Image (cartoon, rainbow, N blue to C red; front, side):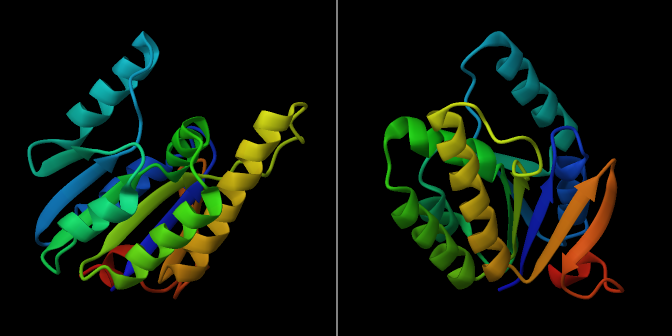
Length: 180
């Protein structure tokens, strides 16, 4: 089925863009949240995202097993918006999961999803090389996940300053039209 990967930096507008694309879908909308409320600031961010989505959305919280969520919820009449793969990568690292296995399992699930899937991820490889081993492992894991998902996705869009740039797919065709 069709899938869209939306990449961008922090506060680039990537989640807003992904949500707008999803809301053009005629059918059920499921928001898959990978973030966890470890502190007050993250709790506030999660609440703001929930309020932004409105009543049409159903939320599923899953910090680790995205492939299982895709298998359980993907239907032709249901669009999944997974936000975000970067937090998912962090969760996997902290849980000591095998990143290669998790990445392969996720891309297999995306490729086999019977309904449309939008995935959001930070592009973390545009800055300086981190000064510690854990941060470098995280940056590398996130980059490898982004590459694998981009190779699987029907369309890839990079968002900077709220403006989308199509990296993969037909730039003349709106991303939301792939999901209909």
